[in-house]
Length: 233
Length: 107
Image (cartoon, rainbow over all chains, first blue to last red):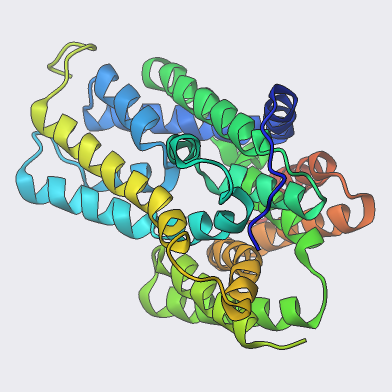
């Protein structure tokens, strides 16, 4: 089941990068908000820049900053790392689902490239795969551009405060969820998806009501995958 | 801020490194494991079901937390995508609907 004809081209990278343009406003605003939060919490500019570009996982950075206190002691440090792991647990599943697509590409290329894995470029990559694309430049190009935009957006946020005082006024807080919803549409094929999505949604909802936080993404996704695995057409 | 813009505290650097390390381990870990597992038809179907399940599980709590405006915004995005098959238009329409509703005093 490994895909044999996977290629990598500059054209694919550019195409992947261009596909991210509609979400740039969302990324820039949230990167800037992170810069502002980091400044308010007392991180130096260098620290904010480093966290933003080498952790590169928005939601977990925000929650880690909630926990952060200056000066940073050891228990708080451990809590920051632990919460980051919990929030990013879904990356395990996202990475796993790329295996059939990228398994043929040598590891010295894929493992560095996996640093740039986000929900966004993962989803773009899979939706292109469904359409028959076998050029993994889609993945790499979209990952690199999102990383670059996210990394740079922290700068104005840190020094100037948020560019837009309330992103909600312009609906910018909903750009990413809306993009995900749009990309979900073509993934629907029939009964199998209906059932597995209902189960995923039900479990995610129950987890969210019971525990709150980010665990619902993980439990819902695992439940949906199991449902998909055990449903015969 | 008591420190300079280009200084970094050792503890903070450790925190950043720790966060980056666990995140990369998760990014690469699932991919790595799937390379060491024999992919049976059942596992393949499970992997195929993952993307949709992840998206549903990601969006649903956002809707539950966000209420009417967020719910309508997501519905608009999906409806526009269904009709026009253009992600750009779907995202723009969804954000515009949310902005308009909020300007009208909805939450």
